[in-house]
Image 1: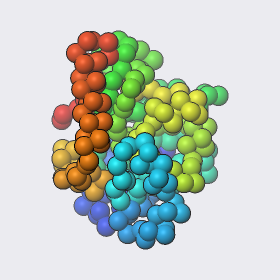
Image 2: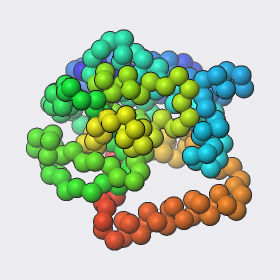
Image 3: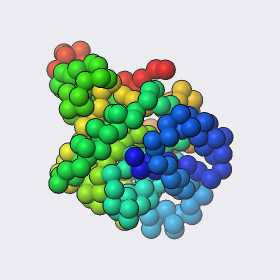
Amino acid sequence: MKTLVINLPQSTDRLRSLNEQLNAHPYLDVEVIEAVDGRRLSPEETDRAFDSRRFRRHYHRNPRPGEIGCTLSHQKAYRRIKETGVNTLILEDDIHILRDMRNELKEVDEWLSSDRPRLLMLGGAGLYRRRYVNDINSPLCTRLVSPCLYVYGAYAYALNPKAAKLLINKRPGCVSDEFIPICKRHKIELKIMLPPSVTPTKQSLEFSYVKPKKEENRCFSERLFFWTRNNFRKIIVASKIFKKLDYVEY
């Protein structure tokens, strides 16, 4: 399957580590996409490429340079998919492939080969409201769930060219994994494959250039907003209305 790997040029260790994994997965037709380093963009370049004002309205905080660069990197991947016109798997360079995906990706490719725009996450963290068959040998259609309320994780997902064209935005104003509202807006069918086949590395969950170790100071209203949101999610999970999907440990 056509695979785009997003990698910063200076992150040679990450790419080397990922290539060692990919040697065990020769069925992936890999092409490296040079990531955008948001830390190296001037204010003028950032303003031309990213809508920080819209970001602040939505997230109640300023965008981090890493988030801007990550979003713009995925935009480059979407434009590449539009050029190639084939179903494509997008991988970030700080991931761990949990198992052989050869047969699964054949089914993923079949699912994506639709007249409808489709996007399938191979892992993530979020909420969903549907039972699934917890067996990797079961047909893919029995292992797909629809994320609800929120979902995180743009490190491994596949999409068809129809979806990629709709996701292209000359001046985005959100994080790269803001899939639920964007897919709703563009009527893209969004699913998560369970159990996940790809997970972030432990190091990337602890710290990355997208999310620094220390959060910026927030005013009282912002702290109240996030406290309310997080507790609401806890109540929803405790009520068993939704099931919670966490990042997979390996």
